[in-house]
Image 1 (cartoon, rainbow, N blue to C red):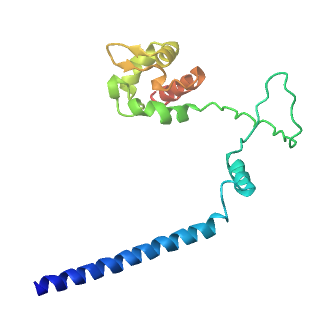
Image 2: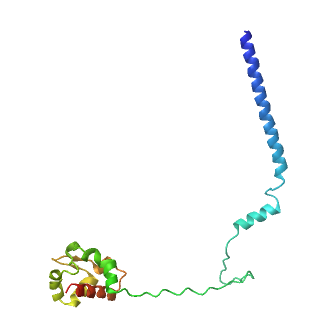
Length: 170
């Protein structure tokens, strides 16, 4: 029983020391809390001003009939000039849209530079080629997607691409 009593005494001593340390830490934390709480609390004008500055609106909304407040003078910036759209040339349109199919014959499209493939199409007339290029075509020889799938191209740009491909294939 002597060994059990020594273990119990040692166990009680360790628990007592740990309890005293925990109590000391708790008391120290409470003291530090009391000391620092008065420095920056939610009830002070400084704290409320800091919060009001962080959440203030970026602008004001005035309804018709409301008087505009005498706030800071507004500076009007001139509108940015709209970019002028320049038409692409025939080679530019060909390299950006047409080359995908007419560069290697996808879907039965005639390859640019192959006179034998282009001759029957050129024989139908340039207006037919323009119409097929702009509006699309689905025939026995192949499929032409309207404007080569680039609906942002103008009719004039597509026609210049057709002119370029015809000139390269004669």
